[in-house]
Each structure stands twice: as C-alpha cells, then as structure tokens.
Length: 398
Image (cartoon, rainbow, N blue to C red; front, top):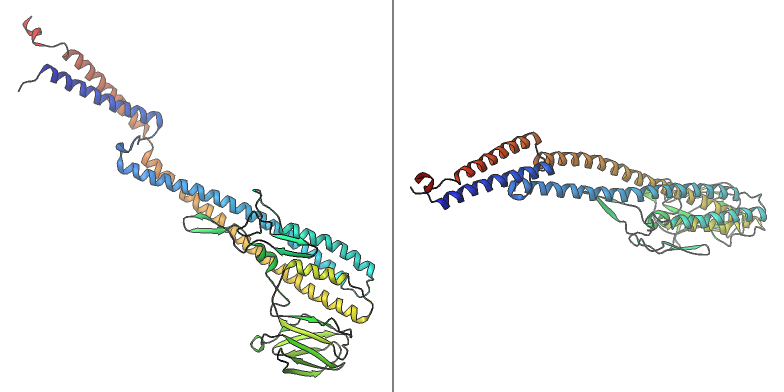
C-alpha cells in the first residue's frame, strides 16, 4: 500500500479540523448552556423542543387572555355591586313615596333624588374598562350601550358576549351584554303582572299576586271587572267569563291557579288587568316611580293609583335586585374558574419546563470533561502533525 505525502497531509489536517469543530461545538454549548445548538445535534430532540416551546408560548397567551378576562370580570363585579346599592336606595325612596300622608312637595323632593339616581344608573350602564371599551355593549365594545333621552333609555349595543380562550379546551366569557344585565328582567312575579285601569274611581289597590297552582294557569290577558262595589268578575281576552264572586274589603280573588289581593274599596266599573309577564328594564322601572311621584294626588282614587304603581315598582325593583345577584353569581363563578385554570396552567407549564430543561439544557460537568478531553486530543493531533510534517524521503537519504 502506498501513501503519498499529499494524502498523508490531507488526512492529518482533516483530523485536526474535525477535532477543532468538535471543540468549538462544546465551547458553544458551555457558553449558551444549551445542549442542542442546531437540529443536527439531535434531530428528534430538536423537534420535541420546538413542540414544548410552542406549548409554553400558547400557555403565555392563554395567561394574557385570562388576565384580560379577569380584569373585565372584576370591573363588572364592582359595577354590579354599585348597581345593587343604587337599586337598594331606589327601593328605599319608593317605599317612602308609597305613603299616603306625603304631600306633593315631599313627593317632589323624593323625585329629585330619584332623578339623580336614574341618571347615575345610566352612567353605570355606560362604564368602560381600562382599555376604553364599554363593559355592557356586547361585541360592539366601541359603541355606547345606553342612549338617554329624558327618562327614556334605549339600548344601542348587541346581545353578544366575547369569550376568551384561557386553555386549550376552555373559553371564558369576559362579561355580559347590557341587554342581559339591565333590560331582560321579568315583570311582576315572573308569571303575571297586575295593573289598575287609569279611569278607576275607587280607592282599591291591587297587589302583585302569586301563583297558587302552576298547572291551572293559562297565560292570557284577564280583566278583573267590578260590576258593583261588592261584586267582581274575571274575563279573558275573548271576553269569556272565567270566574266571579263577591268582594269584601282586603279580599282575595282566585282564578285559574293564581291569586290577587286588593285593599280598599273599588267602585262600580273599576277594572284591573292580569296579564302574562314580559320583560322590563331597570330604567323603565325607575322611570315609572318618577312618573308616579310626580302625579297630582287630589282624590282617593289618585292616591290608589299611586299606591298601585308604587307597589308594582317595589316588586319590580326586588326582581331587579335578584337579577343582579344572579349575574354577580355568574361573574364570581367565572372568576373562580379563571383561578382554577391558572393553577392548572402553572402546573402544566412547570412540567413542560422541566421536560424542556432535561431535553435541551447542558450537563456542565459532562461538557467540561468532554472539553478537556477534546482539547487534549486536539493538542496531541497538532503536535503529531508537526512531527509528521517534517518527514520525507530526503530525511532518510541524509
């Protein structure tokens, strides 16, 4: 076998270059603390590391989404608490106004404060978050949800609710629409609502009523007519007679599984209605109280009309308070879910980080040992080449 001088030099230089490259890779690993510098160092490990990095990046985005949702929900919870406090004050003013001994000046004083509370309720409905987005406008976060014209309030938002992804499998709504919070409140007792005809001449006041047998209730608009001061009849929307009977002061009237009570003395021809519940906004409820307080009370019939309106309003305010409490419970449940999700996300991030560290981080003791071995090997290769490079045929002929 023949070895040329050029081939011998090339092989020696290639060996030195290979050892030098290995040394440079080890030095780079030590300087960065990363075992995998390029995919070529560990192809399968590099792919797995990319998957883990992507998982951690997604988790950070989920955490940011959760922070946004938590901030908006916390602000909504405070807003709902303010709404409940305001409604409680409105209820107190309504109870005070439902006093037959008050004169017009006293009722006007109550109405003045109630007007301030009404305007405050509109302002609460139009609150924004830290980013300047409206809390209760649905998807249309840049649209002012409630437009006020006098004591008439119109909802300009939509009924959508944004949901933010806080984990690979979970989306959390970050609020409620203004329609759901302030508008969509059942009237009366939730099944039916009572009212007095404006032309009544007696001083009878009807209450909100109750359901005694839900199976017998047939939704319809019923007219409770007093054919005399002591006799009544109930007719449905087709004018068919449903029930009738005698009336005594502070009496109770039952028909079709419902019950209403009246206090005072009706006059012949007086009429009351019992109709299925629809929905009513908080703004309409407060506006109705304002309207009742501003009426002139000259006769006993006038006072009865105000008493009926106030009684209806108190029932409606109580339903609004219950409604707000239910919404607050939903907000609290969502905040609790966000906390639980954060705990689970932290545990998952810790596991991913550990796996990524085991896969990509460098074992410094092993790397330094390898570096020393590589340096010694490189130095030996360089010294050997220096000796070999001086050998030739002429060295033997001398």
